[in-house]
Image 1 (cartoon, rainbow, N blue to C red):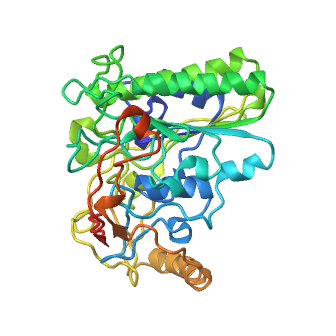
Image 2: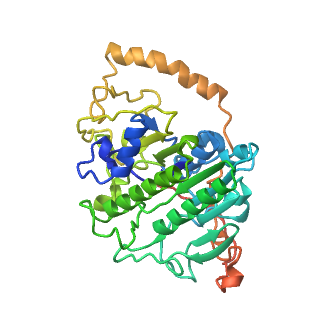
Length: 408
């Protein structure tokens, strides 16, 4: 049961957040194992999630782009591609062992019919194919649909309200109830299950339910974190109530570091440098907790000293570091403030160790076909399955594909 949220390493009390507003996650870490050196496969949501479910790097599973500077990409409404049929996803593997599987929340691996969760191993789904951006004008861009299994049951900002002014929405509450119901049904059926609980309340535009709005010292983002923390606590408590905690492995993590560009509506990456969309520690190192009573011994926390920006390194220009890579001593410099000088013996020793590994990777890499190169307004969520029952079908424009322009 992994839980994937857009939260930073420094958002948890157990990892040093001064507000101490995550009592359930902190308790989960105390009862289980805290992984302070856990890394995501990519500092952006879609490729990170593709890696989580396939166990393969984005360059291998196709969740990358070769457009222009060939860096990160994700799956907005206009993306043509999605998760490749050549990939084997975790629910497909577990299905062979008799597991029921459900995804709740954001999918983000392609929104066209052939890419949706039920076509890729999941038996159930309640959530959305894209992030909750909006609201949109129905004539130029449709609002994102919310699905119950194979058919939409409404759209964000319409049937599923997100108040951009107040930040109020009960989506996380709905996702929690869906999760508890799924766990109960599988327990009663005595069937093993895989629940991928992936709310996105901490992703801009941030939201929380009425009960949590205004409670946090950290503003609206903190409200969202508190509700997610509460929800995780409810899930763990439910497992114990149903007497299946000792037979259920739970893993909590985030898809990428906190989005520092969101300012006060973004999270904290603790002492680490930068955040989402960067390959510095703040973008790649995530909070992670493993919980399995009776099987996983109690873990411990860690508390690093604060870090700062690195002059000449954390710039807005793209610099080629392949021939002379930046190397940091993370034990002594967790904030990546001081690159090791290329003239030192320490640097040369590290280079001698990592260079053969890099070259072996290059020689043996079989890259997946890039899925995130092409965009087309005609493929957006104009008429998802089930729209006709709700009178929610919209007319799509004529197809006019182009190469997506990625700024990441």
